[in-house]
Amino acid sequence: MPAICVNFPPLPQPEAAEMTDSLFKFMLGEGHVRGVAVRLGDAWQEMLRRRRHGSGVQELLGEMSAASALLAGSLKFDGTLILQIHGDGPLRLAVAECQPDFGLRATAKEIEESQAEEPSAGDLVGLANRHGAGRCVITLDPRQPGQQPYQGIVGLADAEGRSLHDLSAVLRQYLDQSEQIPSWLMLAADERAACGLLVQRMPGAGGTAGSDAARADEDFSRAVHLASTLQRAELLELEPQELLRRLFWEEGARVFEPLRPRFHCTCSKQRVAQMLRMLGREEVESVLAERGQVDVTCEFCGAGYAFDLVDAAQLFHAGVDQPPGPAQPQ
Ligand SMILES: [Zn+2]
Image 1 (cartoon, rainbow, N blue to C red):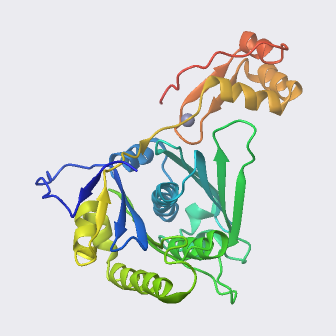
Image 2 (image 1 turned 60 degrees about the vertical axis):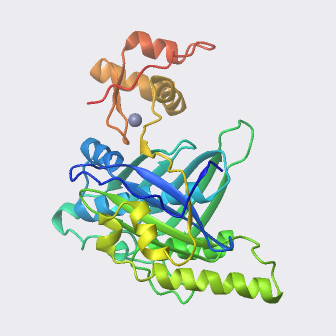
Image 3 (image 1 turned 120 degrees about the vertical axis):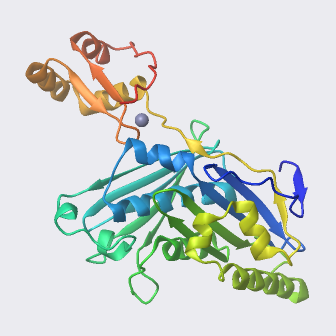
C-alpha cells in the first residue's frame, strides 16, 4: 500500500471546470472495514467522445466503468478485470475493462430496437433482462502468461428471482456470493462523470467468531448505514476525498494516496492481425476480393486498422508477425 494521508488533509479549492479522475482506497476505524471511491471525469469524457450509445446504455456503461475500477481497486490481482453484461433486450453486450494501472475502456452492442423504443435510462431490466436471461460476467484475466483466467457469473435477479433494476444491486449480489465478502456499493453516471463507492467488511476481520467478529460486523453495518445516506447527486458532484470526509468523518477514516484512472485502449495492429488470423484465410480473402482491403474498427476506441493485400499475405505467412502499430484515433 502507498503512503497514507491520515484523516483528510485540507483540500485545495477545486476549480469549477476541473474534471479529475481519481480512485481512493480507504480503511475505517480499527481496520475492519475497507473501501474504494472512484470518480471518472476526463476518462469518462474521453470514452463518450469516442463511442456514443443510447442514453440508458451510456449510463450503464459509465456505471460499469466505475464499477470495474472499484472492483480492481478492491482486489489483489495483477491482470485485467473485465465486467460484462450479456443482455436479452435491446442491449446485447456491454463491456468495461480495467487494466492493472487503471487504464479503462468500455463498449456496448445494441440492437436496432433501442432507437425505436428507448428504455428508461439506467433501467437494467428494460435494457438487458426483459426475459430473465440477462447475465453479469466478471473475468479476472491474469497478466502472467500461462495462468488461467477466473470467471464469475451471476444473473440479473435476486435469490427469489425478482429482477434487479440496477447494476449496484447485481454487483452486491456478486460480491456476496462469489467473493463471500459482505459488501455495499453505489454507482452513478451522467454526461459529466462516472462515480462509485464500495464499502466492504475486511475479509477475515476479527476472525469468524467471538467479540472481535461481532465488532467487525458492527463496524461494517455502521459504515453501510452511513454510506446509505449518500444521494446519487452527491456521488456525482463530490470529489471522492470530500465524499469520504462527509460520510465517514466520525469513523477514523484513513485514506490512501490517490490512484489515477484514465482512458486507455489496448488495441493494436498486432491484436487485430491475431483476430483476422482466427477469422481464417478464406474469410479475409473474400473481403479483400470484394473491397481491396480489410478495414477493422476498434469497438472500444474507434481506432481504424487497414489491411491491404500485402498485409493480408503476411497474416497467413507462417512465422511472420505484424509489428505493433499505434492506434489511430478517428
Ligand atoms: Zn481500441
